[in-house]
Every structure is written in C-alpha cells, then in structure tokens.
Length: 107
Image (cartoon, rainbow, N blue to C red; front, side, top):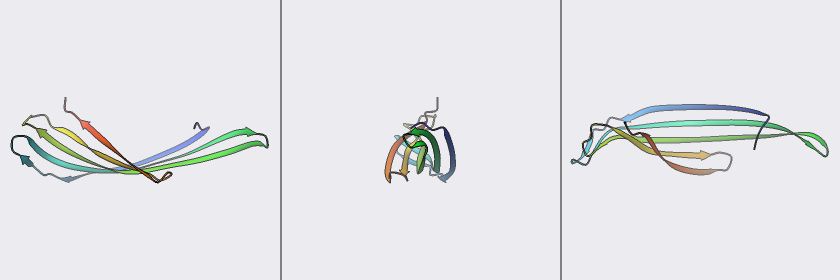
C-alpha cells in the first residue's frame, strides 16, 4: 500500500557473545559468536476520496527480531567468513520468519 505520509523508525543493538576459538580438527575453526536485536516501526497515512467524502486511512507496522552469527575459518583458510540466522517477529500478523544470513565472505 502506498501512503501520502510515512514515518519510520528503527533501533538496533549488536554485541559480541563469545570469543570461542573452537576447532573441529582441520575442518573448522570458530573464532567468534555475535548477536544482535532490532525493532522496526512504520506508520502510514493515506487520504482517499470516497462516496461519503474524503476519508483518512492509517496503518502501522512493527517487526522485531534477533540475529546470531558465527565468524569462522573453514579448512584452515586465512580469510574468515561470517554466516548466521535471523529470526523476525511481525507484531501485526503475529508470525515468525527465519532467514539465513551471509554477512561477510571476506573477499
């Protein structure tokens, strides 16, 4: 839906969880675990002409979520990679969604 007026806001917080330095033989070296949380808010307003005259429609959207990422080196490569998962909760529809994340390939 398009709006005549749209206000948005976002808050994000990231933190290191652990400097693990775990190894699985020569296959995998996990350096670090990171986490993050976020909250996104949007409020829109649209004015439409109806049979009863102009009418204003308002909608608001809110999502919140958590990220967990791992910084690792596969097979003793010097370049670290970072992958993880993001979980999103839509407060309007009361639905969860999980998305894979690839944050840094290191090239």
